[in-house]
Amino acid sequence: MEEYCCVLFTVACFISLLSVQSENSHAKSALTADGGWLSTRSSSIADEGPCTVEVRDQSLTYSQFIERYAYSRPVIIRGLTDNTKFQFQCSKNSLLQEFGDRMVRLSTANTYSYRKVDVPFLEFVEHLLRPQSLDMLGSDTLYFFGDNNFTEWRSLFQNYVPPAYALPGTSGAYSFGIAGPGTGVPFHWHGPGYSEVIYGRKLVPVPPEKAPNFHPNKTTLSWVVDTYPTLNQEDRPIECTIHPGEVLYFPDRWWHATLNLDTSVFISTFLG
Ligand SMILES: *[C@@H]1O[C@H](CO)[C@@H](O)[C@H](O)[C@H]1NC(C)=O
Ligand SMILES: *[C@@H]1O[C@H](CO)[C@@H](O)[C@H](O)[C@H]1NC(C)=O
Image 1 (cartoon, rainbow, N blue to C red):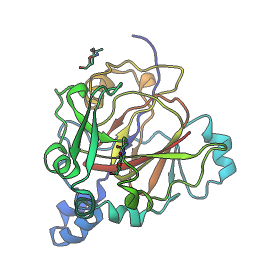
Image 2 (image 1 turned 90 degrees about the horizontal axis):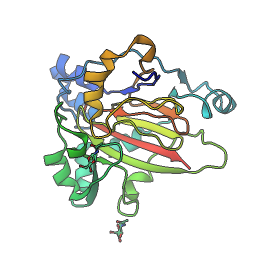
Image 3 (image 1 turned 120 degrees about the vertical axis):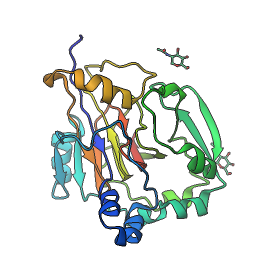
Image 4 (image 1 turned 90 degrees about the vertical axis):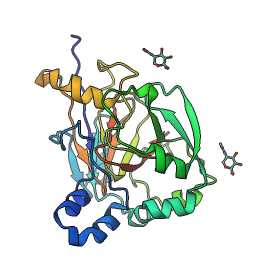
């Protein structure tokens, strides 16, 4: 097998899920914390794995960020942004109320996103937002991420606070999405940027010089369940589960994939 080394990021939102299960009497506040997006986890994936990505907090200075991470390695930064207001606006009820009749553009969840489908946001949430089954191909799975109409959704995006640490000479472009448990985007790469979870997901990045071994139409879920366990320890990706309140910075052209452990609401800021 071709030797490669890759990085696996896991993003999840278990806190509210656990609190609902263990404290029914607090279901109301837990639901509020969860924005009403709570759903069953994917039965095919284990809980959060180890976190082998560097994790820093807001004591990380901008010059430290530029020196150590911006051009060389991913990092998770805690407490860099406060998106409480945005998170509130991303609750299921408030998004449906404000945008239920707006169209969203879905893409097939394979590496090269072939097919696009436009549906009303309400229809997406009620009928298409569901757990990913293990045997389904990415090319047959519709995914809502990016392709956002910033004119129609301006009242939402204007409340998002992007991570303050930009790269010199770049400006940020947002991609917003919502997806069911077990869904994700298989290995791909693009320019540098941040990924922030409003509710969790899992990402799998790989250093740019070594492409991962994967089939572009298969899902991240099948890669994590079938391929990942067969890898030698030294070939395993570095990985971490990110949660609301954390941002993941990914450098330019790092291979990665994403896997949502739960129904997830997320936004990326691409620095171009
Ligand atoms: C975004 O929405 C506006 C207002 O409905 C519409 O005029 C425009 O064509 C849309 N843009 C795209 C790229 O679909
Ligand atoms: C992936 O799926 C697309 C769309 O169904 C198809 O055109 C393409 O040939 C497939 N790629 C591979 C490598 O099987």
